[in-house]
View 1 (cartoon, rainbow, N blue to C red):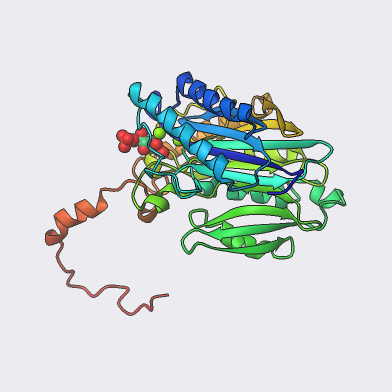
View 2 (view 1 turned 30 degrees about the vertical axis):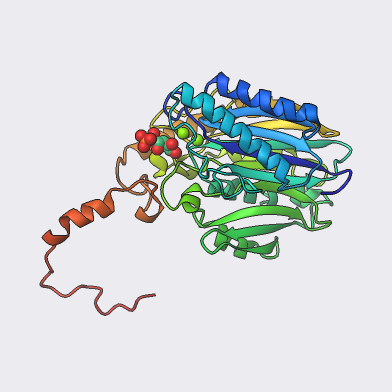
Length: 379
Ligand code: F6R
Ligand code: MG
Ligand code: MG
């Protein structure tokens, strides 16, 4: 924590769906607004917004307590608990599903909710975009983040804005080993891509401007399945990006989503499908529980006050991406239970395979012919 700096904390959880996993009712948002409103009156928060994307309840909060501030994380946790009570009374679907722990112990990370936070000194004008996605996982941000901060075919500023010409530092997290590495773009672009193309394992954790170390972007990187060791719901990530004046322009930050790339998630967190950019109102994934959605909430921040949100994908320029996403959704769905629509076995969040295997184990018979791979060295 440091004086004069603003912290932007985005914390989200699925605490109950209406209907099924497709959305959540106004009652949950009202309960959350009441709780966060009291915290703003007490002076803990400067400002806040409560939003939803599919079945995910999203808190966008500004304060001066720094990242990982216990008081702010506890506020979010207690608010999710209060919303869970309402969800239980309404018998909403999966009430409290993302709250994996019984007791708060200082930091909400690792307890189920997703968190993206950054602290910065407010610029003369501070445009930020908060992306929120449903029915997908944090690796979904790798491709658009690379395009925003690493690809001159997306971001003209990398070539023609002297403040960006030195490029950006990509912090990449290996979620299996819980290790991170910082790589420079463009000088180590190929190494960055070698890692982040494996979206189920390597995730961009933060991006900093090389010239002065200013923070540019922070996604949530929690993977609920790894936290809980068993399926407990998809991670449905969020992402915060600062824009303009030496960062990618708002239009460059939104541009990657004109391509509805394939992400992991969709039905039962076990399928590949296109990420569809929609307006706030259309973030209600209901076809085969999808296709996965992303919304973009634009804000100007003024002394910590949130001016907004502007619904950035509520623009006919994204109609074509939505149409393409529907075409891709049709195409992928026709594969039914086959890969690559269905995820590889190890990435699925639900699978009956171990049970089937156990039941049928005794019926497998050894092939008489030697295996064609018998002499192949394992790599
Ligand atoms: C995906 C998701 C849904 C559910 C699906 C089955 O992230 O939340 O697609 O996995 O609706 O839900 P259950 O197993 O609760 O019937
Ligand atoms: Mg749900
Ligand atoms: Mg969700």
